[in-house]
Amino acid sequence: MISVDDALDRIFTRIPTPLPETVPLARAHRRVLLKPLLAKRTQPPFDASAMDGYAVRAEEIVPGKPVFLAGTSQAGQRFTGMMQPGECVRIFTGAPMPIGADAVAIQENASANGNQVTFTQPVTVGEFVRKKGYDFTEGRELLQPGVGLTPAMLSLAAAANYPEIEVARRPKIALLSTGDELLPPGSELGADQIVASNAYGLIPLLSGYADKVIDLGIVPDDRSKLERALLSAFDYGVEVLLTCGGASVGEHDLVRSVLRDLGVDLDFWRIAMRPGKPLMFGTRGKTLVFGLPGNPISAFVTAVVLVRPALRQMTGHTDPFWPFMGVPLVTDLPANGERRHFVRGKLSRNEIGFLEVKPIGVTDSGHSSSLAEADALIIQPEDSPGIAAGEIVEIIPLSLLT
Ligand code: AMP
Ligand code: MG
Image (cartoon, rainbow, N blue to C red):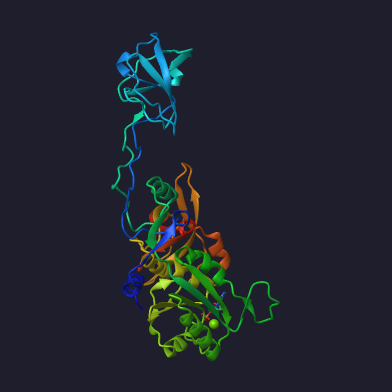
């Protein structure tokens, strides 16, 4: 048996360096820069008003003393000419400051009567003025590589004048489910048949890291059919091939030997984790191959713990791991032996509103309803003697696995 960390290390060493591609900014959400993004312009490009009000010379503003209104500066249409002594200019948020003005008096402190404006408060130099370049200047590093682009980052990239952006390519992924007993949802099920459900969780779990995910459907436990399906995926040029089921050592579990026959350089691991002990990992040319267990919880948890980090690394993320946080445990966890346990848990809030997590009693790897009920996986380390209620545990919040 190898540890989760060893398995991850061995996977990471076989992952190719991400290549760049250019995508429209509007389609770059969650994509990852491979190098820093530099501002193509200066923002604001001029000294600008931060409020609606009057551009003034601060030293001239005395409460109650009228100032002459010389014109207007609006966003997109500046006041041309020079603001003379004794003058002010009506100004709106984002509009360029007139030459000669050094502050903005907000309109709440002003009253206009014809061409005369009086103010109720004195003004200080620079008040409510956004200096040119105060947000960013041309050439500045605005965004760092290695993280998924957030909405705020995309908005910033647009402000920096990027209509498109260079990000890491994402792989084409294919997923194949295998088992004689499996039928798609909605089927007329025979007495010995079950629904092939895993793909419906795995595809959305991983698709954010894929250029596309091809569902190769269900293949029976039949050597030649498996070979044909897997070969077609290789021929199509998928870069990550996932199989699900047929991963244990039962006599119907052909995936391992078929992958070998097809020339996959394959490791078969018993990983010290629960759920999800058996996992195959290998490469064939440029294709990474993961053979996931068929049990629904094992398939999902191995995908979270081993496949998702691999895909994150492939797609340029400098932190390939799952998001985690520490929260107190609501009820005790018993000792768990030599395997790292990913325990289904339910988040709630204590009396003062802080998050806490309660283990869900079920640990069986075929129990899908408890996974759907869970909103976290509690990570119980290897050889834990048990964890008492109240102690802080590390969790993977499932809602953050986008
Ligand atoms: P296997 O890895 O083929 O030994 O499968 C282990 C268990 O998972 C068996 O109970 C299978 O019926 C079940 N199983 C395999 N593939 C799937 C699937 N795609 N969806 C749901 N259950 C599955
Ligand atoms: Mg099977």
